Length: 564
Image 1: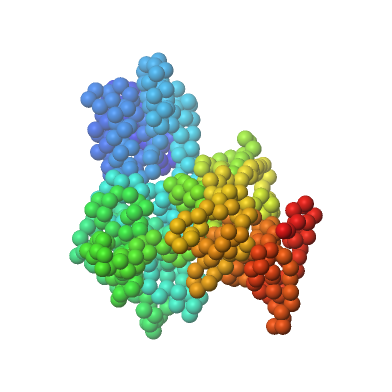
Image 2: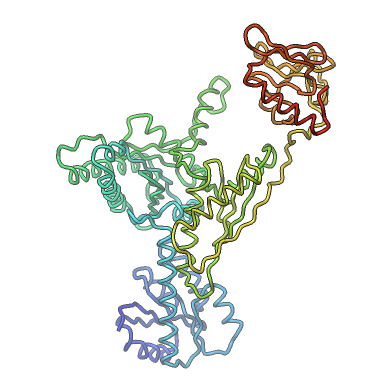
């Protein structure tokens, strides 16, 4: 016999008694009730392992009871219990609807004991497998709290639907524990803090460890500063005591906890915005006395012309990336959309990459989950900080590679595949990819027909072939062209990005020259080289640049485009 809690819901007394008698020899805890309302009362106090739910019942039918059950589980923060619908009718439409809304199975009356037991066992096992896979992917192994992925999956819903505070927590001076007592003791401190945080929370709160000594939580019952201060005081007091228990009474590191909070819905319901607000509040605490809590409120000086510097500082703290992890970015669907659009507008080159990870049909869901998780770790370890990753669906990874051409991108792909091969044996796992250049709307080097320059404040449009040299003089960017001298409002680097690199070459930090306009070279007494252009204009260049200039001139000559 197994110790699972099985609930049977049926308004028919005979059917209810029959089902209960069939199950009692197999399960030690079987509860039989007569209505959906009684079911909700029971599940409010107990989490069942299986529910057998009749569809045709008075007052509240099975489908309505199912809907309310899922709402209840969501509020209580429980995983959904598996539900098998029961019916005495041969109704395929109802069966299809039940399976569509998420039921585990559908059984018709009268029951065959062997079939009933087998289907219950299969449904419970499937639910446990899904729960274990979900927990492995979303729970931090060290602390037992949700990890960053779990936070991203749960906190946005709480922010959208509930009242409370989204709270960012950071351990003060935790690095000293690692430095002085070692990382193993540091791990013990993190575990102790997770336990303290769990004990200080209430049912319905959501606790997460997002990385290192950073935590994120949603507290339903903390809405006022008084409550926030009380929580901060309790956490700090218990944290110091826990560290003394671990490291001895002589422990004197000023360990503590700082909390930054954003009220929901007062500060909005957007998870991304609330996270930034909580981070801004946390920054205020960290800049001050630490070991306390701050609740975000808009700066009353925001928007005043005489306080632009303060406003800039405040916005910078909200927007900037804290504790940069040193790996590629995982910005989510919305974030990568804006990165893609930005690159399309302004990048000179970028590549896009799509990986597919699949397993053989005979392999289990666990094998697939392990393969996807392992491959995502290889991606994060291999790609650059400037790269962005999106897991578009299970087993699919979309990657943006800014400022890379196809040859460089292929090298990165090879490193990823080599890293995957070295990470272990992957029998039955298949990795495929496609690599394409990103469509860009920004002008490419050498493709520009005209560039705007200025003559005494008036705009002139010149073709790059008319440029002789572009240089900085008295902090102004000057353009010498065949038609005269002009000024420009774009930077030297932006000019370099627009001009054909086979024709224009940078000869110093402050100057670019047109190879086609070079007339001759002359050795100066100071050991530098004087360049004389076709219009008589002169400039000087260090000897180390001359070899590159001659090489490019030879390439132009061989290509049938000798300089003027």
